[in-house]
Image 1: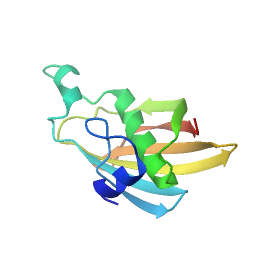
Image 2: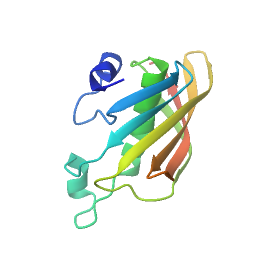
Image 3: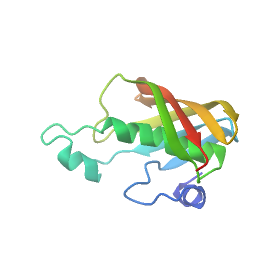
Length: 133
């Protein structure tokens, strides 16, 4: 699914649309998002001058947005972030591969695991809980 398809699901728009495309392997269950960082993204300018890195909170946001597309639900809100680990920095020029898998659901909420890879190396991982507002 390209950006136009993503925009049909997510309410996010630039500069807060954090994924470029999504490959849904099993709708509502698992898929992979891609984000290619050019270096011109707004957050690199101030985080950090001379050594730009993607903020951790925005890495979590890429997992969240990928999960929402896989679930086909753009109206969800982030309720909980747990067991998140950042293993390496993500920098301008990196291509992020965001793998998400739905672990469970119930009562309008979804628990999702996410792993972010750069160059085949695990850069970040964790679980999030999304819920209907």
